[in-house]
Image 1 (cartoon, rainbow, N blue to C red):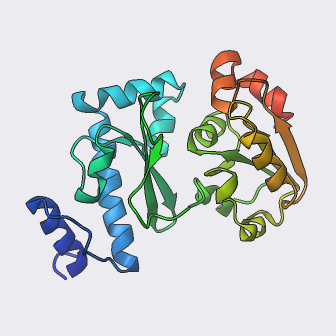
Image 2 (image 1 turned 45 degrees about the vertical axis):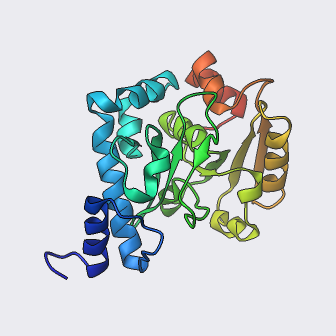
Length: 239
């Protein structure tokens, strides 16, 4: 490798420049993190340009502050990498780990767009904000999705996000060993899936404190409607 980059990364960059498809390109473990870092950084920079303004406006509309947006390295897909072309115009959400971004998912900013979330084939399911698990505390919260997780972080609540009831793996329970309390908030805006998620997770973690959000709300919408203090009170979060 030259200049600290692996041959795999150089080949990926060449394919990106030439606009070649990535279907036959394979990365080893180290190169996956390198490429995810390149994707994350490019999209994060694009967010703060005029072309990224629609995505930034969407994030501000969801009540996320600039410090939160920068902390989680959120981005806008303005000039997509080849594997991300279907995500053009979407919000990029990297799953940050100690080695770097372990995966990148993309969310539509238009309410009517489908699918709401998209990721290249083989991205896999990741725990969002897994770095929070490296700093032991007495309590932590588990949310259904990234935006709810970021909302709690912004409120000063340590949290991780799981991508829905079907994404919870039985082995995830071991991530929460040692916590006295694990808070799980069930979304109440998704035809019962939120309650299923809450009950499934609560049955498998230590010291569960399960709370359903009021009718029609998830964590983010409740925060935007009623504010931080009301949200923490509803969760019965002990600061």
